[in-house]
Image (cartoon, rainbow, N blue to C red; front, side, top):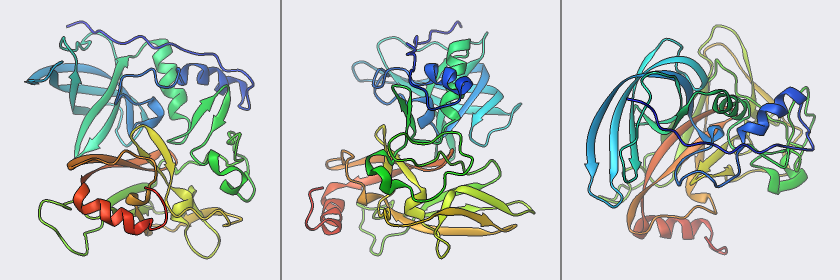
Length: 335
């Protein structure tokens, strides 16, 4: 089977604030915003990004819609990991679906770049491209930034850009990339840190309405090593961990600062985790203002991000149950 892949249009960036070599890669990394098909992420929105060779393709059911939904299961050998916890040489099984007239084709001869999310323990492909020079440079450049960051006219823009100077108080240290609108540095979590996310059980379970709870999620960051680890993206004011000032939530293709962000906090510094230490905090995703909340009963996906690490969680939103909860969260504001 030969592969058919979308061609990506690269744009050239000017007015660099970034080091020259990094900026050259950026010129490929961020194609014109909004040019991708609905649901197709930029590389910098993906939970897992890797290069690998497809070795097996199994066709699954075809949805009876128009255009139809084609489903496949792919077996891929990983050769290079750009983001996520996969290992080079690992064989992974991924699911893929595409709503289009003709079935998609996948290359069994040449490597592919894959962007995926984890869903119920499985890898779900959200984007797959030929691993040619341009696509590879795009993906590597995109994954060199924290999740949710983007480049606009050559300038790095963070998810906190709209907060202006309230987004960051303190020194940027030796950060190579700084948000051009807020002055906030691009901070990583670190390769050895583990990020976990789980929904908080609801105070009252309502049948068919809140199987995933009422919007609260427990975020845990841990150090599984035998040495202390500095976690630059996890911030503290010296007294407590400021989860809302550290996390980003991606939803429906947009990056949001975590609800309850404290604009007056600072100066901030990174948390240091001792060997084996675990720290946790709770955030409420229903406090997000901007997503299109489902009508009736349907699923919405929240991707919780700390620097370059993220965990995606599918949330069942029942409007008759969760709308009143959101109304109580914002009694004097529009949702």
